[in-house]
Amino acid sequence: MKNISVFLASLLALSCAACASAKVVLDNAPVSLSADKLQWKEMPGTQGAVSYANTQGDILSNGEGFYSAFVRFKAGIDNGLHTHTQTLPTVVLSGTFYARINGVETLYPAGSFYNLPANLVHESGCKAGEDCLLFQYQANNFDLNPAKN
Image 1 (cartoon, helix red, strand yellow):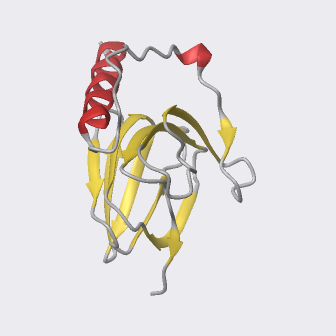
Image 2 (tube, rainbow, N blue to C red):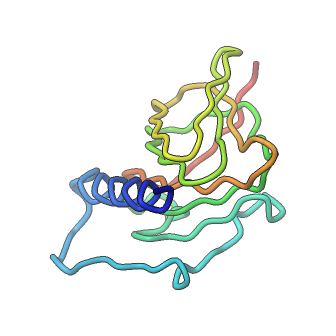
């Protein structure tokens, strides 16, 4: 049952990703990426605590358009207070991710979906005990801008 939930969450995320931006050019060819074919890379500046595997586009595209990607956080990693310049829709596939907004922490266990609005000051991370696997997409490249209290 857990595998079916993960599959359905992934399918939903991929479907949303395909429709999320008019900039995406779809050639009607199916996209099929098995887990063993994903190319994992370390997110720069994280000393191995965060890694990603692009599924469409490039999470680090430097402003060159839509991306979708799996993102893995080591258990216990906290991103500190920050913002993103665009909305960040995310599906949690494993582990428990969290967002802390105005001092209120919301937990997102496996199977959860969240969508953080652009420029929302928040803290986020992966709870201790189990690494987190996320699927996220945006109309443009990912950014994380440190914020002050």
